[in-house]
Length: 176
Length: 108
Image (cartoon, rainbow over all chains, first blue to last red; front, side):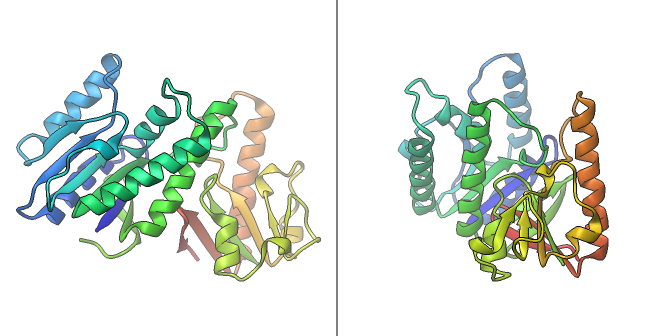
């Protein structure tokens, strides 16, 4: 099954996503697909915090900021992708300067590949569309890219959960 | 009147077509009284009265109150006014839906 987990900063979406991936995996392989580029001290700190949070939970970590479709995924694996917002930024603002449409089509294709290869896919994403701000054009492109992918995942996923203060609010599917 | 709220690009108009049955041509942006559905309420300036909004079958408004409070006074006041208007519309509405990721949750 495929699940989408989203929430604001510090909402507890990672912890929820990890627990969900673990329970879906059972005794099968568990892959943590990390998309954050280690750029600077803050990213390093965040990566370290997430590593500590995952320690001893049986995740095999794969770090990839782009081209996620090329990852080798063992048969029957459960993949926790963290996170969509980061990955979308890495793709849209990549050195090759792809267009919005190219980036969107590419990411949709990769998501479908991951859904096909993995037994379970848990995608974590950020909730950044409710602030009412207006931004420079490239930021607006990024926001609309992420919104479009959220809608696709909303349709494709068996479970969609918003995490608020560590509390899961189920938008689609049943609690697992 | 039915109130539909949600973030930017969340699928509000699509929901109104798919679930509430109003085609795109039944929707007007930022203007009341032309069609049964009005969207872009958050961009109307000045904002309409709750009484005028209540004449519409469906009012669609983007959620705009969840980020850093704007430095600019006009923007700040407008954003708060949108929130208060939505509270009043939600009070009068027969149903309120919140949309995210193309999915809906009925709040009222």
